[in-house]
Amino acid sequence: ENSASPELGETVPDELRLQIPLSHTRVGFQGLELGLESLPAPWMPLRTPVIVVRVREGSPAHDALPREAQWSRGRDSDERVALLRPALPHLRMTVDLLKSVARALQVTGSGKREPTGASAQAPETRGRASSEPLRASARRVA
Image 1: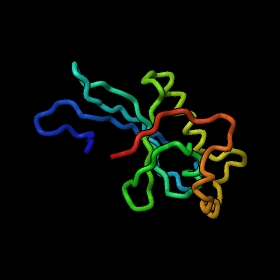
Image 2 (image 1 turned 90 degrees about the vertical axis):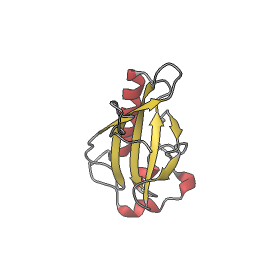
Image 3 (image 1 turned 45 degrees about the vertical axis):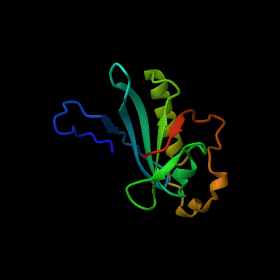
Image 4 (image 1 turned 60 degrees about the vertical axis):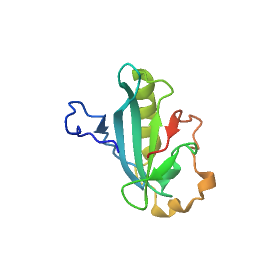
């Protein structure tokens, strides 16, 4: 299990996460985090960016994200978590992906949140309706 707290005897944490506050979000949005993971490599740990998205299952926030994302159970039974990674671990690609995810999770137009009833949408129809797709490789949370 990854933890931001170093293990006994270690001096460097194996990951770092920063919570990104969003306003005017879709119903079911739980949290957005920008993380830095350490992956094993032969010469030294490789640090790569990851975006952690937390939503309620079947909610408008869940429906607003890419169908290709691999969702796992979160902290409780109806929370779902996806790890999104930029195609390359480059600053510009990471910022662009983070902005794209934030736009997908925020309500447009009047600024009002979507009604809860919209969460009844079938999983087969989940995905962005926008012509600007989110691009990322998604991996399952262990």
